[in-house]
Image 1 (cartoon, rainbow, N blue to C red):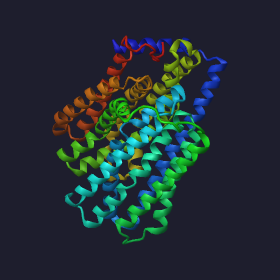
Image 2 (tube, helix red, strand yellow):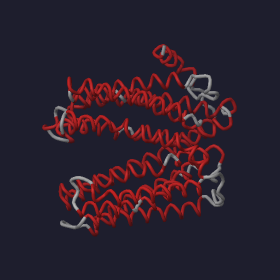
Image 3 (cartoon, rainbow, N blue to C red):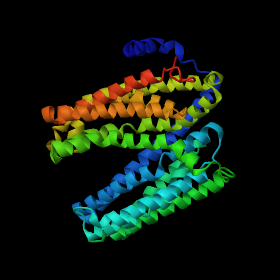
Image 4 (tube, rainbow, N blue to C red):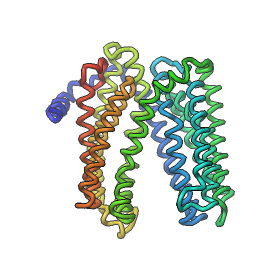
Length: 440
């Protein structure tokens, strides 16, 4: 049924994309915002690569490993302390220019940050295989969750108001501050405590810039709080649960390969996955720019937004076509690309890359339809889709990694993405989706 539906949609493409002058104006705005987000992600990823190379050159493998450990802990802490409030703010601001939840969300994040920091200070000394310097650095670095709370809520409000230019500068300043401080103060033999202090200072600087943008570019927005902490927690809890599911879904293959097949096979998989994730930047940028428009369209009713409907149809097909072209291109250049990036020692990653490349097509479906559901407040459906696909991914890995190793994990990733796309295609057409934006 899903295949028949997709073929029907493909046949309708020449007739469905009717673009009016108003639609072009809206599309121009979304296109501009997409470029801001694209350059924000591209710039931050490029600078982070340089940052990683500097850490590796000056602190060596052990120092880089310790930094990776600290970053992983802080990443998990940020997922926990954000608690889905960024998406709640973004949707509220985009749909109704209502940022009254910003102060309450900030308070909630600060409370959760204090709890997580206290946990790090209490548990840190008992962590296995971590020296005193690494534990001390982690404890100091965990304090960055405080400025990150300000950064998170303000950047969500800026994106909801489609201030993607400011969001670009926030991202670049944050990474540039980290890179500049590390370049200036970290030397061979420097302690992890100095590194943690530099990273904490960079996060504080980016939070101050975010506060400046908030005061100057969003005057009067969110100055008065509305709603209680309990109400916000209830509203954000599904988003928080979804964030945890997404993190597990994205990382479970690496975790299972590491424990079941060893570090070498895991390295091959990571090498194959990296180009695929890097090329997702365009999809993520487009949906990031489109999300506020989706939220406003749902708030006003789909029938009253013909300009938005045209834009959604165009975006849907643009994502699918781009996904297919990227999949085909990666398949054709997998051999020279792997050898260029990693060298001949990583040739086992080539078949895995060719297989993972074709996840781009179901990924294109998933990122669009999940954004539509999230923009309309149907995060429980998105959580359901991720839960089912996560269980399937876990089960397939357990069955296929012992049998086929690297290719088994890659095939499991592809199968889970395809099933997830089928689930989203089913959920999007349920009667509860009163303002479905699936192109018709």
